[in-house]
Length: 80
Image (cartoon, rainbow, N blue to C red; front, top):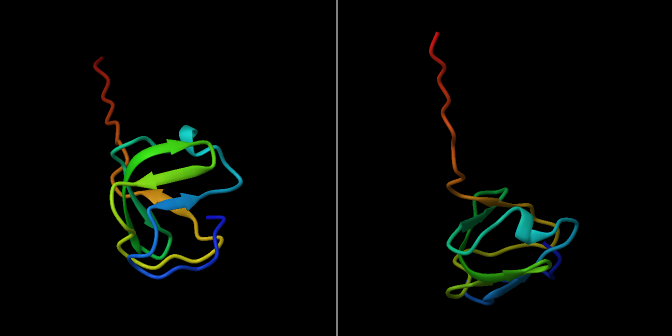
């Protein structure tokens, strides 16, 4: 996160740094911070900005790392 700290219910736009957000997230993803603070669901996005469907649920701090709450999991099996 490349933002000053903000409280819950303060923002719908989150600015990111270091990585291109479009390579990691997609609209509809539920975003959480490393401390498990729930931020919200992505409505739209650009390389350095995430737009949420509604105001952020929990507070966020500058340099927080963001994660997808429910990433896709692939289960592979092989037959002989």
